[in-house]
Length: 431
Image (tube, rainbow, N blue to C red; front, side, top):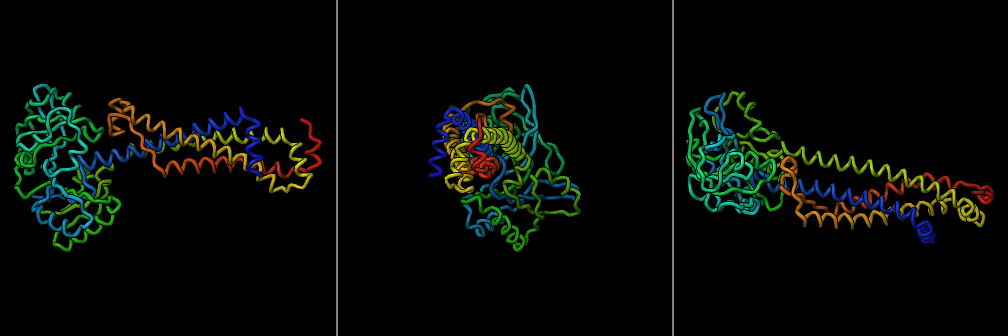
């Protein structure tokens, strides 16, 4: 009965209720779109990062010929790989990647890039995530080839079939070069693709003059990435028991560790176990930024809506003062009057957020279908060349419950004052 009274009251003031409902729906839809962008960014970062530079769990490390000079190399990696496959039943597949930092030189320009050594036949995830509109990915099977990204190709002024010179100091301090042919130009993947290139592992070993049993990192891909913390902890213990020297946990990407490693007075091999979040810590700020922006915008709009709700409740109570007095005079209890007005706020909030959730989901689907291109500068943060939105059931439920709850809470104070009116005063109210 109370909900029926509340619904009839809202219907009686259709224009006012419609305007407030539309405002509530807009805030809900905006919250869903903004959080959907945050979720999409996190998923895109995970997909791009675990393709270009990290596995879910990584066994990398440093080799030091002298105490002050380290290289991102894992020697005799076959033993480490065998141990990881045996002790990680959660493993889906594993790949080995060379790691390097070199100068790409063309006839018209040059740039410093990270160079990854890949065996393309052993990289199922690479084919799924890296789109190659120019050239063929399978050509990376041939030694002396390289894959670069579209923006890199523009800066270097090269196309498929052109030759680049790759120059880098070996890990013993001697400069070396190799000539490579551009066989594939991939679509950009935001910030992560701006400084990554890929060549066959054998070509990278030739550049750095490494033995065949040496690589940069073993990347482990799990069937369930929620198992990452457990697998990471177990691997540290297993590798230590297997006779390997293991570095302490350090949640930084490997290239940020050179300075601290070079200051340590040890030589030889030490392994470093990290996860994908450690290796991509430098790009997580973009997700944090968008999430913070989403929260700030939503809070500001929600405060405005709540102030509007409170004002409307005051107006409604003033208009219905004599009605309240009559209801109290015929025996309606204070808590029932309170519940009646709170019910109006809750019903308006629920209707508005429900419509807003549907609107937000439709907007997200439309944005995804439109594949709206974004400027290059924005690509660095979104990690993709078009805008994507991925609202989740959790955020839909959260938006509806949170905003409805806030509106209901705001309606308590004016409803409480309405319930405390004296019947005789309310009945004789004029206005």
